[in-house]
Structure formats: C-alpha cells, structure tokens
Length: 318
Ligand code: 5GP
Ligand code: MN
Image 1 (cartoon, rainbow, N blue to C red):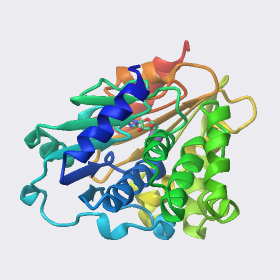
Image 2: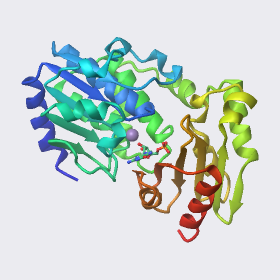
Image 3: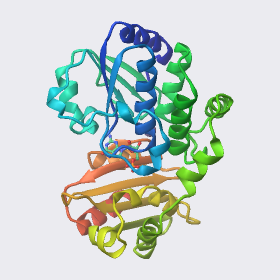
C-alpha cells in the first residue's frame, strides 16, 4: 500500500490542473463503484471542472443517488479528456469498455481499496484497509471540503453497500466515524439501509429461492448457481436479482466458504467467492479474477458443470 495521504495532496494538485475529467467505475458496477464515481464527479463539478462518469447501466435501487446527469451515455470514441480517474478497480481490465479511454489519456489516477490492486495508474491512491472506495473518496473530499448532503448520501450508500451494513470485517472504527459525520450532514441512514439491504422484488426473491434449491454443501463449503433460464424465464427477473445472493449463502450456519455462479449473457460463468476466514482472493486469482481476501470474483470461460467441478477442487483444502 502506498502512502495514501501524500498521494491525496498530489491528487488534489492534479485535479486543479485538469479541466476535462473522466471518472470510471468497474464493469457490472456495484454500489461502491456507482457511489464512489458519482460522488467524486459531483465534487469535481463543484470545482467548476467538467467531469463525466463512465458506468455501465446499474440497478434502479440507486435511483435516489443524485448526479445521474453526469453519467456519459454517448460513444466512448468521442471522449477527449486530460485526466482519467479509475475508481474501485483493482486492475485496468476491470474497466471494461472504459479501458480504451484510459489508454488514450496520459494522466491517470487509480483510487481503490482492493488488496489485489496492481497500481496500474500514474498516481495510485490504494488503501486496502479501507472498507470501500467510497470511504477513500470521503477522505479525499473531506480534505478538499466539498461534501454536501447529496455527496454525503452517495458516500454513505457506497459504504453501506460494500460493508453489507457495517457487517464485514473491513468495517473499522474510522468507517463508523465517517458514517457519523455523513449522518451529521443530513444523510437518511434508515432509508438507505432499508432500500439497499432489505427491499426485494418478488422476482428477485424467486431467484434467491432457485439459488437455495441448487445448493450443494461439502463440510463448511457451500456452492450454488442459477442458470440464465432460471433468472429470465422461471423467475421473470434479470441480473439485478443476483446482488446479495452469495452473502446469503455465507450466512448459512456452519458455512465458512460460499461460492455463487451464474451464466452471463455471453455464456461465460461469473463466480463470486465469500469467506469468513479463508483467503478466497487467491482462489479468484487462480481463475484470473481478484478482489479482497474474504470477497472476490472471477469470470470463467467454460460450462457451468466444468466451473463447478474446477472450483470445488480449488477450494477443497482451504
Ligand atoms: P463480486 O463477487 O461481488 O462480483 O465481487 C467481489 C469483489 O471482487 C469485488 O470487490 C469486486 O470488485 C472483485 N471482483 C469481482 N470480479 C473480479 C474480477 O474478475 N477481477 C478482479 N480483479 N476483481 C474482481
Ligand atoms: Mn468496493
């Protein structure tokens, strides 16, 4: 980990000398990537700069987050900018289509909290002790003095998402202090917890039911999956329904390692790994993915059956 505070000052200096700024979150953006990128963009706009956010489409759960107008939806080939900021990405390949934009811009910054981060930018602000990238963005914006109620709401949402409501062991004393400061700025914490963690459509609950039906348990390890047919035809849902399923599997009593697989549109298999103690980052890395020690992911180019058996083999001794 580099010295995050030295680099924040360098970052503020870079921002002051830039005009057109691109901020990008990772592919299939989660609550942290969405909120960290949009909150940073809202703050940069307050500096009278021209930020745009590159994000793939995201669930309507996040509709209450302001700054949607900053999300760029036109052709990425038309983008010209003097600064590119990656948020919540451990590796530049996680940027998806936005990686092409990064490759055209000289000045690059990488703001993240993944242990697997490979410091791919010119300036890297990576704190693998932080609960979320939103927490790192809070430290930056707090130093700059730019946080208002809308930005605070986005940051609080990112933190609640990535800690699963302050549950994960990445939640530190500082995380709670930051949450308190954000609540002081007017954040409606009760609304955010309810909307993010407890509000489910019936269709999404049916996908969870399929995942529970498909569970196989081997000692303290649980593996499950849902097929495209189960998501779209049987449950009349979509990929937004998959959020949180792997966490639910890990919450089963006596389960210490949980794996959740689903088929992506292109037939690839997405794997999510969660653990109470074991290092699943190493497992994800062995399949070309990454993430955190206790929460990682990977995408596998094989059939569901093959993915299941390869993963079971990989986790059997952890
Ligand atoms: P999830 O299982 O929820 O998709 O991801 C868990 C964590 O691992 C997240 O922090 C996510 O950013 C990271 N992650 C998921 N898939 C990949 C991947 O393919 N490569 C890398 N480097 N990180 C991933
Ligand atoms: Mn994150």
